[in-house]
Length: 187
Image (cartoon, rainbow, N blue to C red; front, side, top):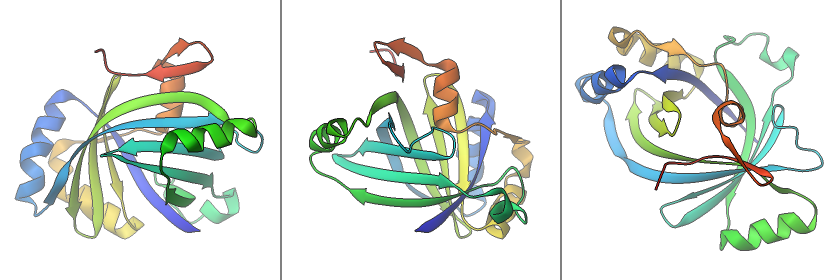
């Protein structure tokens, strides 16, 4: 299982505009824009903080991802604002069949959130700017030294670290729809 290393920041609209012009200036390569629907599941062995299962639909594909927070001892040498999680993912098709399979073992959708994502490559990291129905965020994914390097390249933006994960933010800002909490864009 690979280790995902990332740092998240909350953005204002003004900061996003600044990033849109600053990223190419500092050498970032634009990879594209996409709309995503993310489903977080609840069930035995999943606890929404330490172990999550997510199905992401994007560009006609569906990726099933399992993430597990590292133990305290495994995180000791890490910057507390940098998230480190074990991660394994696989493409599934069609996604509706995976949802049906999971429901037969009582693993059911708990949260659904949508986002518009813009992705850049910069200095051995992936930089994503995400718009959700409740705010703007940026994530930098790479090793910790590369993340620090990119932060210094973007220091004019005066970034504010966001400690909560997207599923924790959806729990806080989403709307209950039956048994599922949703954070969707208005149609």
